[in-house]
Length: 69
Image 1 (cartoon, helix red, strand yellow):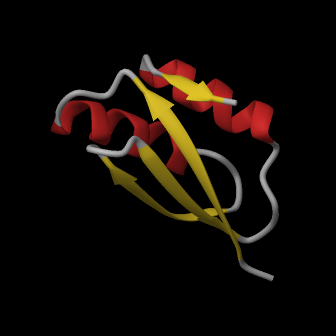
Image 2 (spheres, rainbow, N blue to C red):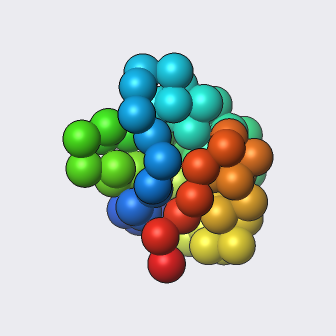
């Protein structure tokens, strides 16, 4: 079962920011696709199963940004 979740991330200002978030979130188990929209801060994550929001927040934190909860 494929699931899609949309998260809002703050602090991204450039394409390097987008790449950092994309790279870290893709490392989460089960993630099959990540789409980052810089202007809105929306991060759309497609995965094989529902993701733990804490794990997503940790990945985004590792990239240097913050998940809006």
